[in-house]
Image (cartoon, rainbow, N blue to C red):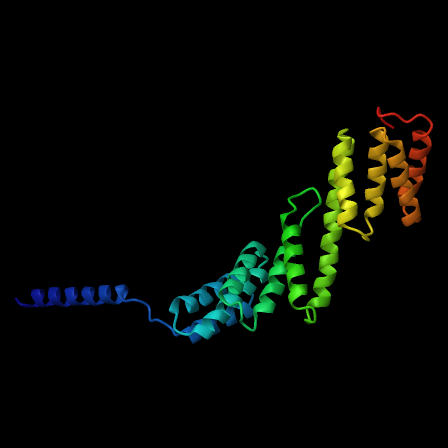
Length: 256
């Protein structure tokens, strides 16, 4: 007669034990363990998993040296995952938190690359180009003898070429929409800002054409003659010669 109550008591005890086990928190791992798990995930290209492991290193707040490594590793994982906006933010945070860290030059290097990798077409937002130029110049100014300097010098030259291409694009847009004075102002500024770059033959061509369309024949002649003198192999010279012939044969502000 007493078996049923005993069975009920045993069942209740078992349920309580299961409930207690289910609600027990997962064992906390050491910062070093989390860091190594992040490295293993990173090696397998499981970048999001690596980031989560390294975030736990930061949250543990028990090993400052390991925490700074984890912060940089998180940035690297974002970069390798092609999440360049997140990578840039993480590298920038690392530099602010650890300005004298021995890896600070590396963080600035990767920050510059993160901006560079976001660069798209000439007719898109130019903020990534501007940010890339700023960080590239900052790196080369601070670490001119770095092992990364040759690579970043090439990327800076490419960025400046892209900036000039954008100025030419805008200048030509003003030209096509008959805003000749805006075109003249923009293109003249580009000539000063980007002295010595290869795309200046386009700049001089658009500038000369803008002057001619605005009825400023002498200034147009100077710009197009400069194009011929400084860039004799430019394919723009043939059209420039035709523009000059037409301009001095009765060119007016009504167009070519």
